[in-house]
Image 1 (cartoon, rainbow, N blue to C red):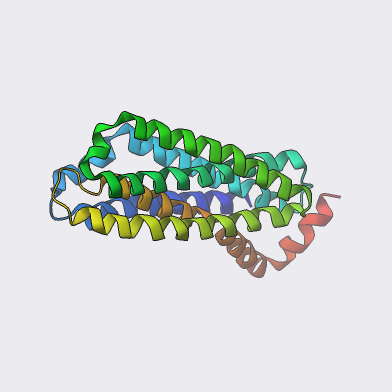
Image 2 (cartoon, rainbow, N blue to C red):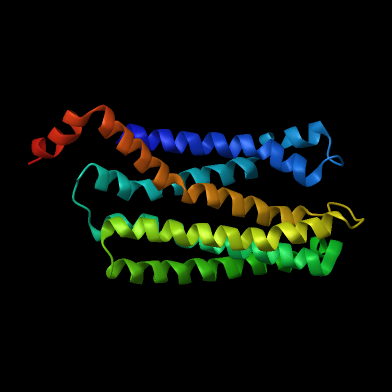
Amino acid sequence: MKRQAAAVVVLYLAALVALTWPLLAAAFWPEASLDELRQVFSQWLYWSFVVVMIAGQAALLVLPVKVASRRPTTRRSLLWPIAVSGLMMGGFVIGAICALVELVQRDHAFNSSWIGWSAIGAGTVMWVGWTLVFYRMSQSSEARDVISRQCRLLLRGSFLELLIAVPTHIVARSRDYCCAGAYTFIGIALGLTVMLLSFGPGVFLLFVDRWKQLHPRRGHERPAAGK
């Protein structure tokens, strides 16, 4: 099960890296040169973002691995998935604020440092709020249902995020000022990456079902060996 979970994490990493170039090209082409697009892969902020998202994907897979392995699950094992889901909800708020601010203030948004700190502050508050909501939800749900409910909410949140970020990005790109669409692009990037992240547990369960079909005896005997 751990190998299959690791495969999902690797697939998610590959999807993030593969999407980076086309997404940047679609957002800023033809103004951005090839060298400028390549520079993204040399930025520590980019790789920090990737590491955070990969860690989040791994955290969401902890509980499905235990359930698929028929290992006992405790409330403590829910804490990381709950915290990660709350963090992603906070990221939606940051992306939405960035997109709406650029839509309203145009290039003046890049000259105001308070905007970034305000977005981070609002995202932090939303992170704490949604973490508490997810924690309350987990008290009245089976452990195996917690992740599926969280992933459904993350998927819906990513759609809502893109409904805000994509139209504002189109409007921003039609304007004539330096770095047009940079803030709205943040919203698009957050929406797409979290959307992919929400599919992780489902992809893992598909791997598990396929593994059980190919190894029916091993899938049947494993619970008996743990008794």
